[in-house]
Figure 1 (cartoon, rainbow, N blue to C red):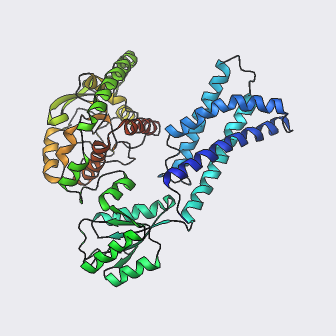
Figure 2 (cartoon, helix red, strand yellow):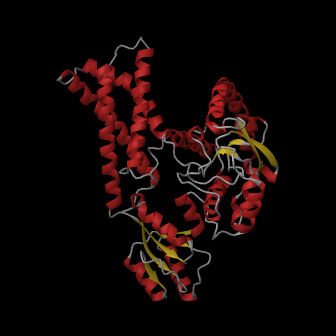
Figure 3 (cartoon, helix red, strand yellow):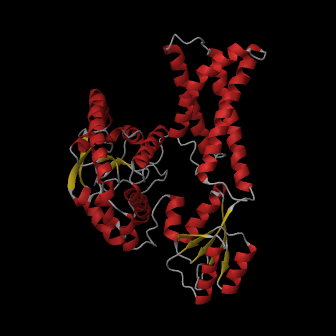
Amino acid sequence: MKHPSLKTRQLIVLLVDIAILYLCLFIVLVIRNLAIPDTARLVTHVRIFSVLFVGWVIIFYLLRLYALDIPFDSFKFATRLMLAVGISGALSITVFYSVPSLSISPKTVLLLFVFLSYWLILAWRRMFVQIMRYSPIKTRLGFIGCVDETKELLDALYAQSHLGFKPVFIYDECCTKDKLEIIDKIDDPPELKDSFERNSIKLIVLSDKAELSMEARRILFAQIEAGIRFMRFQDFYEMFLRRVPLGVISEAWFLERTDLQAKMFYSAIKRAADIVFAFFGLLFVLPFWPLLAIGIKISSKGPVFFKQIRLGKANKPFVIYKFRTMRVEQNRHEPTGKNDDRINALGAFYRKTRIDELPQLLNIIKGEMSFVGPRPERPELAEELEKAIPFYRQRHMIKPGITGWDQVSGEYHSPSIEDTYKKLQYDLYYLKNMSLALDVSIFFKTIITVLTAAGR
């Protein structure tokens, strides 16, 4: 039996969510009146609430409640669902009290509905993820070739077993990786053939660095007739982890898959949107700047604004503007670290809420930055990182941004070589896949990150 695709599972979740919303409405009407509602009353409520449910589903989507990478039985999902239901309920109340022509004013019904819908949807989602996690119907896959990133990918596959992928074996005739006890290791062609016969393999993840004998090659070619799909390790890694595996890609792979010429039209639209939103955003926030400035002056000595040289598109330097969040005394302006003691109390709040980055609207209007893109780096630090990390220079092929794919990844990345390496994986993923859909996703993820004060 074929394992349902991610899109199919998302559709199932959506349809059941909608069914639960209508079920909650019916249950709440029964509770409110201690009787089954008559047809006229039920039809009236269904007609009006159906319009609200459209808004609920949109809010659920924007808050990534249909993203399957977050397990539905996790605390993170439960809190995000609570946020989504709270926002949806507040907007529903606003609609009822701002449109007096509506034939109902369900105060008690709406409050009961918000409470019940949260718990029923949460229970259904937990049940769904348990079914998917322990279902015998899996996309069983094998790895051909062993690289440094294999362990990282296997850990992610096991951690997100609810997505339906089941690693079965890894074949490499020269495998020396001792940290792969979590999967069967094969180095003999007859064993490889036997594994294909014993397991219903649906997908093979193939590394370019795999050293294969002629016999192993013949076995693999025979699997094409059996209907097994093949994916390059780089492509599967990127699809699953949503970042680029720097250690296994080549210049040719990167050049073949990065076509900025094809994105020129979207880049022009993005620039126009940057100007419009930055201009109106600046008009909206400017009246609050005096209050923010007073807070900065009270909290610590020094200027209101922080200015620093950063690298923009094509390695062109520019001056970035921020509200100052650090003390100036004994500050050698080294890269910011986690729990940096130079950050004052008000500055920590400004950083968590991204208020400190409001002056960068000026950088956007000037054309030095975009709303979405890689974070701009200091020239001297960029020079060091370029020597240590492959493809680092390529992140400057597009404009830097206030927010980006790395910033909404949910991980804190320090300026260290190790963290910058992972940060670059996200930056190159954005460079390679830049689109309206990805930018919109980053925008709403940023809102979630700000509301939950995460990732910084």
